[in-house]
Amino acid sequence: MSLELVGSNLSFFTLSTQTVEEQTHSVSRISACKRINMSGYAFPRMCHLLVNQENPCRRALDKNIFKPEKTCFGNLGRPISCLSGGERDADAVPQSDARVIYCVAPAMSHDMEAHPESNFRVPAITSALEKLELTPKHRGSAIIELLNYKSATVDDIATVHSKSYVSGLEKVMDLASRDGLIFLEGDTYATSTTFQESLIAAGAGISLVDSVVAASKLSNKPPIGFALVRPPGHHAIPKGPMGFCVFGNLAVAARHVQRVHGLKKVFIIDFDVHHGNGTSDAFYDDPDVFFLSTHQDGSYPGTGKIGEIGHGRGEGTTLNLPLPGGSGDTAMRRVFEEIIVPSAQRFKPDIILVSAGYDAHVLDPLASLQFTTSTYHMLASNIKQLATELCKGRCVFFLEGGYNLQSLSYSVADSFQAFLGEPSLGIKFDDPAILYEEPLEKVRQAIQRVKHIHSL
Ligand SMILES: [Zn+2]
Image 1: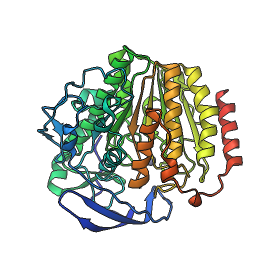
Image 2: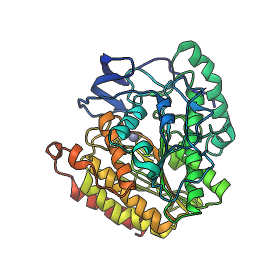
Image 3: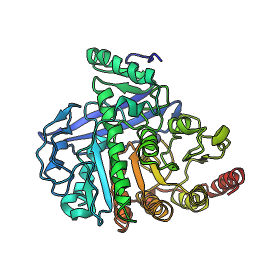
């Protein structure tokens, strides 16, 4: 297909960004989100974004990391030299006491000023992990960072996306190089490094899956994987980019795990506040991939209705649960117990992959659900337990949305806490005073409808 380029029309975004502090090694930014509109749904809210950026290569100095690389990917979107002292490479198997294995692909040159899907996101998370002592340096072999991952190949991407899209994207990099920034579709921008950095993001996810699967052959408690990557992937459709997403990182990893590891049945949980339409499209008629999405009813991109249940042989292996605005912790606990657990138990997966979006947090500027840090801890803990019960602990999370840098980073950190079997940080970070009553009767009705449609 030919990519639609819409120039630099920024009518969708009216973010105003003010730089308040710039230092040699850190940048702090406060953004006032006057109105963010993804496809017509506006949720006015002020958000204060504060983050410290750091050198992506510093992690190579940490002790318990996978191999010192010859290469890691730096802020110019190309391999750069990194010092290191590790002992392992991406094909190595984590030690049996490892509880978390993560990789970092921050796509530092895929960025647009004042865009919520910015290159501040992944560094915000790694800063929080450092601050909360959730790194290999602080936790020994319980937490491993996978450094030596490979870029995905065009053939990897083509298991999900059309070759014409992939080659078309590569070709428009010249244009992006000339103009600095182009729009691929709607609000989805590209810079001259987007193609390469998107291959890196997808490749990081594939390598992480490889490590978790390898570990599961030696232990019933392999580490949970977390791909801290961007650009995100769950809106990218087979024929093109969409909704800030370029390649379906999780979808590509799902096809990889089937092809390379022979793990046929993949159960996908997408708890991003938006419907994962791209992932859904990729597997809509596939009976071996169960796609379960919870999202805010009526939010971008408008798909993911309860009645969308898959097609042909895949009928019944797509489950959508749109939640009414205001749904929060109580709603999601019920959804997990009444919908997610029985769906997964019935499907009997070989692996669970998670589209982990953190934009359902009450502080997120792009939606109006009321998840808290504790909600994400609960989800991570329960999903880990589900994977232990059903598929030898094989489970990998993929970062999707999450645009308030503070709630994003603390919620990812709390997910790590859950993987470690440690208590939630919610008491420290959540403010019950900002929460309001959840629409639990509407939630109950939605759960009942899904149960009825899917015979749960
Ligand atoms: Zn989202």
